[in-house]
Amino acid sequence: TNLTWLDLSFNRITAISGLETLTKLVDLSLFSNQISKIENLDTLSNLNVLSLGNNQLAQLDHVMYLRQFKQLRLVNLAGNPICKDHDYRSYVLSHIKDLIYLDYRRVNPTDVQAAREQHQ
Image 1 (cartoon, rainbow, N blue to C red):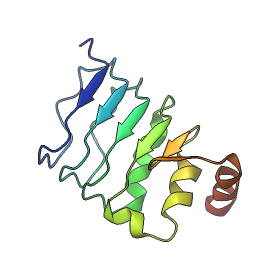
Image 2: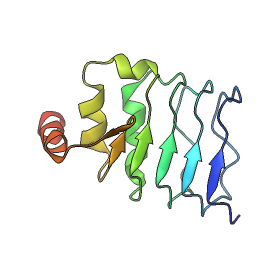
Image 3: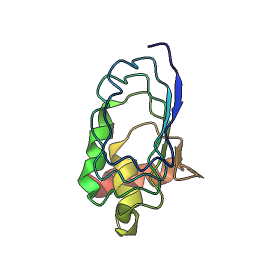
Image 4: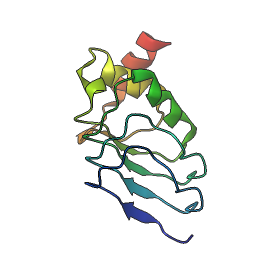
């Protein structure tokens, strides 16, 4: 329960589950798995870093789930089908507050403002 960093990359994981007791988790990497939905992370309120790159996330609205994580500063979704959507970056920036990095790139405050105006 005291775990703060967990890397489950490259494990062919198809669904996020079994992390409920890891309430102190700050950094979670699920890079390069087969995850198609962002779910079952509700108890991870301290989450600061989340890497879900190279998975099977195909629905842009699944990103809305991440709004509840007030401490989230770095999100990696690169390599997912949603990244091909024309509005992907602006959609993420408009819905997840206080991001500093998105997909290995520093977030520009001007881009955030433009994204919020576009999506709200």
